[in-house]
Image (cartoon, rainbow, N blue to C red; front, side):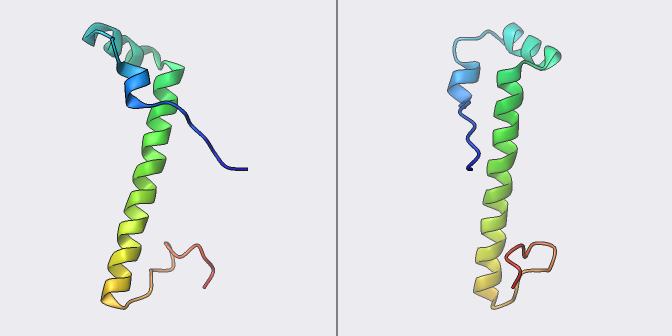
Length: 71
């Protein structure tokens, strides 16, 4: 089953004052935590794709730590 996190930056922060946003960080608001998790996942995927692209361009295999395909 795929993983779906539906928080967007706009849905989490739109219309909130700086004070309200600061409070969200202090108290660990669930929607904020979900957005932060989603952001981390997306960044990791982007980084991996960039490394794969670079490895292809250089004609080198991915390091074993990054090669999860088993090849």
